[in-house]
Length: 261
Image (cartoon, rainbow, N blue to C red; front, side):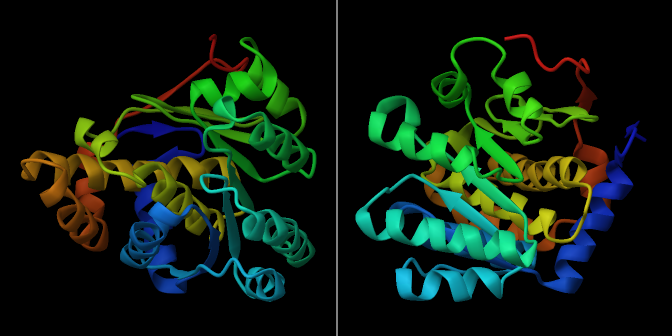
């Protein structure tokens, strides 16, 4: 049995059961190419998505949800107007917020917007190494976010979850996941669903990403390419068992100072 302080296979399976039992609502503001797959992934894991980006509705939908995902993949004027409204409503309701600052390393406008959002203290920032470097420069980005009290999910071939007092390394997944658009976006939404059912946000983030990536690993091994992967992944996420979590989980710890980059 893999067992680290605050996290083990049994805990992850328990949190998955909480998601399925409680069916938390996740309000998702994401990019246009990700909406359908993300909504289906949220439903498959047992949560309930809402997807509106209309500024006149965003606050009400966010306030009545249990978690918020803000993904900057399509940063059009409608989303730029809706995001602050949804963000403020989520904070007023005490809901966790996941920020996924997609491609901020390729757009100064998007980077500036992400920097402003970080100052409003999301619960967790989900980034890849290039995005983290864009936010804080090429060194010590994890530490700088943690100093702000913000948890970090640094994703890649290996995922790192870094919080003030807990640090996890997650190694599940399958290469075909990078060949399907919106897997990262959907992973952020599933992560948000887990944040909604556990006050230990570091543990919840690690559990959510583990469940998502274990399902991807199983589906990737059973299919021949991206086209067959998507339905197999959704089916696997929907039916994932505690036994599969325990058998598959690849979990480690990292230094309390964060990942040396």
